[in-house]
Image (cartoon, rainbow, N blue to C red; front, side, top):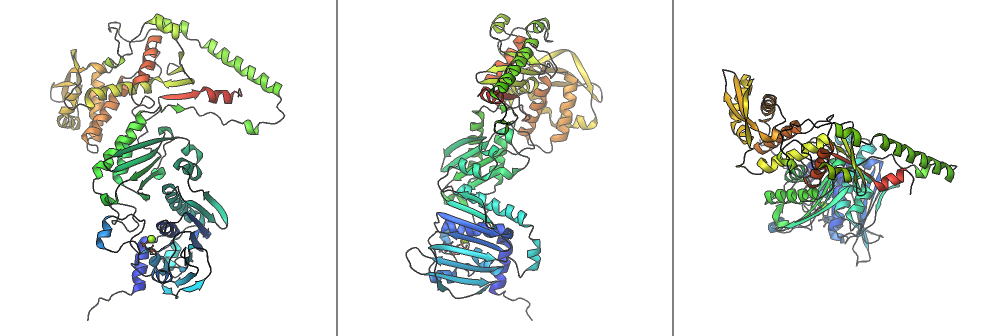
Amino acid sequence: MGQIVVLDENMVNMIAAGEVIERPGSVVKELLENSIDAGAKKITVSIEDGGRKLISVTDDGEGMAREDLARAFEPHATSKIKLHSDLEHISTMGFRGEALASIASVAQVRAVSRMKDLPEAYSVEVDCGKKTEPAPCSADYGTTIEVRDLFYKLPARRKFLRTANTEMTHIIEHFTRIALAHCNLDMTLMHNGREIYRLLGGQSRTERIAKLFPAQIAENLFVAEGHERGLEISGLLGRPDVARASGKFQHFFLNGRFIRDKFISHAVKEAYRGIIEPNKYPIVFLFLQMPCESYDVNVHPTKIEVRFDNANLVHSQILAVVRQKLLGQNLDVPAQMPRSRESVAPKEETVQHSEIRRQRIAEAMAEFFREHRPIQTQQQLGFAHPSTQPRKTEIATDTTIVETDKQQVKATRQFLQLHDSYIVSQVDDGFIVVDQHALHERIIYEDLCRRIATRTDEKLASQRLLIPETTELTDAQAETLRTNAELFEKLGIELEPFGPKTIAIQAFPGLLAKVAPAEFVQELLDLLTEKAVRLDKERLLHEVLEMAACKAAVKAGQKLNDGEIERLLAEREVVERASQCPHGRPTTIKFSLSELEKQFKRT
Ligand code: ADP
Ligand code: MG
């Protein structure tokens, strides 16, 4: 006797529901997508009890005729595709004809719909797959779908639902994704009769982001645009200093559909590499437009993944557009000032009081700068670089910061060094505080990259050591050295065997003149042993250069003279990505005059 049976329709739908309808949030997503496909301009979502009790979506779209309303809840019923060739260029949000049938197989559903030009509306009810005939009723044009008691006949699934708050978080997430991709729509979200969002149609993306996310996010975005070979990219890129610990704030959209894609994520990560800390995720909103023929959406039941015909183009274009934009920006971190208390200041504070306070602060500031005036002290303290160093005109040719003409500097000096670690310098609209080590690190790193990372055939110029330095290697280090011989050569480090477990360093890169050769070789071997397995060749080279830059840069706690500071600040103006060190930490914090004036109540 045969064991195989063909499942009945309701079972088929329930199984499909298992894939498409995970929780109330997925119902909201599917219904919103249907409203958008129906050409709605205005959509209202009402939720009760986190969606367990009710999910209702009302739109003013084209509506359904009586016979369509009867058919919409059948499995594989869709008005969006007809021929198999339609699958090649899907421009609607839906096409699988599964959502309504799935939802109606696991809940109590009532749908009311009226087409714009027809006087009568119809309603149908479906209770876990059992459907009534459409009956006439009165309603405005458009469609309302109400979903009650989701999973009420499936206790196992119902038990899986979380608290109303958690389910609401998922609903808001789906609502937000759709609201961002469709700024032209009027969209409202209600929970238990309370309005959560009311978004007006025609808002800009930035305005929408400001409504949907914490204020700090919308205030810190750069607009980036690009268009190449049929791919249009429009992005809002978060400043590196507001990057987050998770990728939750990365939103990628393809032709109005929220998607996840590893090529896009990777391109974004690459574009921000070196200007955010490695464990952070930038906040990014990317909107891509491309012909529907150039990708396949039919690869995932909820359509959250797509397959690009030319993933390399997508990757390289996003990388180029995002990187280009970031390179052109001033990414200095704005100082975190205490929030202005203007609004909560006690009303009794008289004008006189505030005037007195202002004067006191001004005096204290003047006193501070008088005491910390560095002119006298700094001239006495030399910088510990060898006096044999020639005067150079380019900082990048040596890791030592070479002095410029002292007389000239004195006349124009607008900076001072504090705690032998930070440089405070006046800029047009305020002042900046620079972490001397971090900035110098970036300068050296960019120089190293320019010299070798971007040119495969180049190697660093090295100097022969008068007395070769020797260092002992472990077996593992010796093995690492053998497999990375090419890298050592590229760095300009010449090594020769010197006894069974010892090597002699014969030549060392001139650029790293301040670094102790044996210690550097040891650390380099440790780094390679640890990371070579995990990283590709290019990434590894960058890690090595980061380490070299860190070693060669001036340290915190090192007194610099005027000429050296002047050089650092001048390089800062021209070096790429000056606002972050190669590890992504800030080099510069900026205090703007306007913010200072606010804090000192001068405005
Ligand atoms: P799909 O969206 O993949 O076509 P669905 O099950 O979501 O499948 O919907 C089935 C059909 O019902 C749609 O193709 C559409 O014709 C119709 N429909 C669903 N929701 C609406 C709506 N809000 N307004 C008008 N028609 C709708
Ligand atoms: Mg649909």
